[in-house]
Length: 431
Image: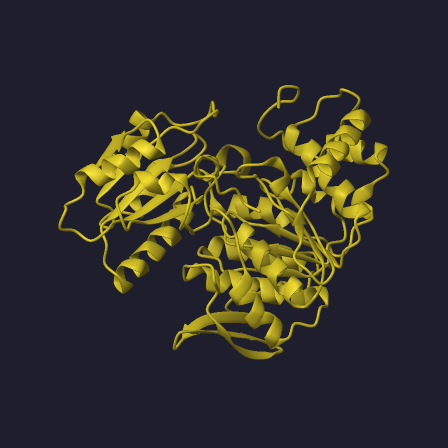
């Protein structure tokens, strides 16, 4: 991080040059499931991995950013078992090889880490590689993949506008850049018709066999079960382990994507995947750890890294569903970085949240000052107060809580960097 520029410098020239020196490991991968989108990328990646592992297949997984430790970005597939986060020594050696090959030339950290992805995934055998886009699609460093087994494009909304454009159709065009001529594409649930039109017209222009949520495959809840249907048939499944109705569409996209690769997906695999899927830091409940001692007794604490208005809407919906099942006062602890739209995020929680506590993000020059973030919450119609730490915010909730009230529900949300801070402080990093 000290040697290379932070942020993104969207281009494929540097990564292409570097990979050529390394022997083009990106051309030696197992079948690739390449995933883009504004929201839901991580969830669909987690569902794809759970499905493949439920069938006894090995799947490498690349995600970004990490929450606590760098090696979380790389999960190495294990035949017939659960993939393991890359060993530190193996990771360090791969970074050294990439640095040597780069020979001091200008390059970003993400491009180095992407080259590490290709080295690790090409040198460890697996049945599939699930690779998540870092930013956008067309000029993302992962987009040197020329022959994906399937491209998956999840919901698109406004985010990273300085890089991708200020309208959803412009952002959709960037995300559609991962489609490759003649290779299958799965299009997840899209809130915006303008985004869907761009994705479908791109698939048609490139002659990509396409499967679109709501047209070619779908999923919904019925009598407490998940009903999935596509052109191959119908499956009656348990609801996903990941909470929130938005996960039904994410699960459906993963099922259809794994089928598009050519794997046989049985109902037994789907059932096992729905029950075993995990995705740290995304509507994850904290049931143990050091931070719980600061919270009111019996508090229900959730953490989530959704940080744009679209993510705010689905997270707020999940909180509203929790409220319907069991009423509790809801408090929000949040920290964000300055590439986001905090007012748009906060508006989703109007009428749901008792109070917002805004906190800093450690080590981030791009964090929004908690005082400024509190003003954004006020602009969205919420009561807010700046705090120094998440622990202080939990203590403040305990202080303001009505002694006669039910134990609260607390959402620690906003930036994934804040979620990483929370997991580190809590002593429960992803495994």
